[in-house]
Amino acid sequence: MVSDYNELEYYAKIIEDSMPDSWRLIKKITGVIPYGHYDGLEYDGSKGILLLLEGDIDVIFHWKDKNEVWHREALAKESLEIWIMPPEYRLSWKRFFVMKSLVPAKEVYSDEKIRVYGYTSHHIESLKEFNEIASSFPSITTGWPDSPYHTGVLSWVTWKEDINLIMREALPPTSTMP
Image (cartoon, rainbow, N blue to C red):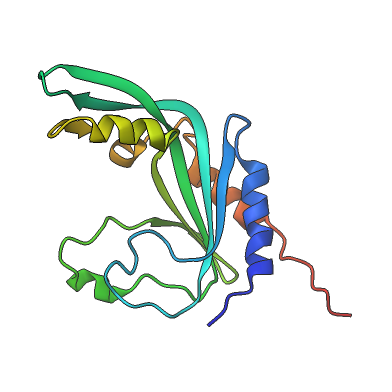
């Protein structure tokens, strides 16, 4: 099943144009499903668009070196992953039976024309720097305790409400049919 990506792109653009000035689009991917929805399961239904949005707040990586000294490095920025999905898309009830399943992206808006899912996290700015730290020790303790993945807190505090409002007010895309 193939989604009408032109229509989904229309709604993606509305979200892009409505985010705060301090936020930016890092990546847009077509043909995806929301994070954690079909973890370990086959899926051949409708797919949508992922917007990876990044804010300007640093997320600190905590790590302990081999001498038991803790370090804190600003290696990431707050991020928000938004999936724009066709209205027929649904989270599978079968994922209930997947042991140790991922925490899935949550639905933040739905109506007869679209479904929107969101997931707060962090985006690593320099994978090279992160990998250097992570691979430099035989055994280290690491963590992202202040990541929006754990806290659910972003500088764009009203993102759910804003997306709901702009999607409710969005006019359907105009048809190209005569």
